Length: 410
Image (cartoon, rainbow, N blue to C red; front, side, top):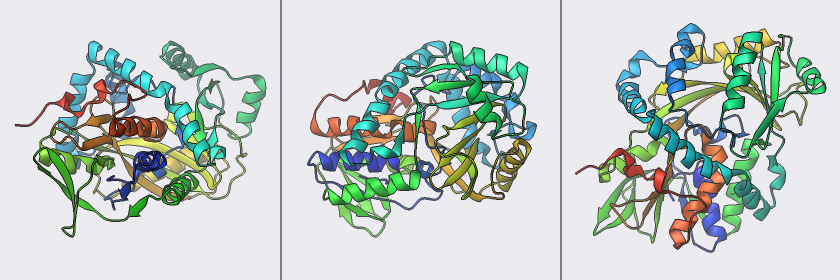
């Protein structure tokens, strides 16, 4: 296993629990893994890939310089322009429709897969299945937002208008006007992301798995089989090599002939260790500000931004300043300035992950590119990869997630 984010850890643990001896290389990265800096949201309602005509049409008004959450830094035009051209190709109606079906099938299995995995390691309390809220601050945005979500494909999730009691609860958290709010059911959150990481690592090692902090420099392919070569030159041969390295997956997979148009889609958060935000309150999305606020055991987190660029770039402090501005304007019970974090989501142009078996090497499997849904899809992806490794049927059709959908190199 190469890569120790939430997808890699869940996959390694699942394999080890099935009796498949697994060695996990937890690689240092240029940018922190999005696995532990996200909003903790199990987003089974997001069945429609963000590669859509609606997303493209809304991009101009969502740009950062206009007050929105979308950032296209000019310094990184060499990264996001080719990605954007592929994104435009992915929004064709037929591709979007097939993407919705594929993503929906995977998301149908997401919550039950987390239930199974956490039950097996005695950590079910980390999964909170209490839905989430979306809130709007103006009548116009409430009408448009409610209409959008009512027309959207929500998979196994459902929504309804917030009750008067729920609106009163929300009103205690902010001094901003609440023009409308809906509550989703079927979705959920992780109670604490550091605790989840610790539980997965401890259970993997207790089951006999080996975890090594080391960088894999490259993959070598000879006679149809792959081997991993570490930065110090050490070579690792195995019955199966599995790449779950997030953004770094591109530098491993492309040299052996795969086309991997992966980009670092960077997100930001601030977190307050102390807050009067009540424990047990589900995540709240302030949709007018493209910001989600989640109460973890370890504190209150406000997260936002879609910044297309390179993982190695320094963070943009203006993003944290914008988050603090939103928090202050809303009057949230947040102890500013809060701890800062920035990390890179691994995103492919059609906003579908890459999960499958390489045609370059029969023993090479991969699972990366989960964009905003890495946490959501980690457990079901782990089951799919374990099925591939053992020759069983995966829990959902993996054909649409084949990395060769982007072409092959000679």
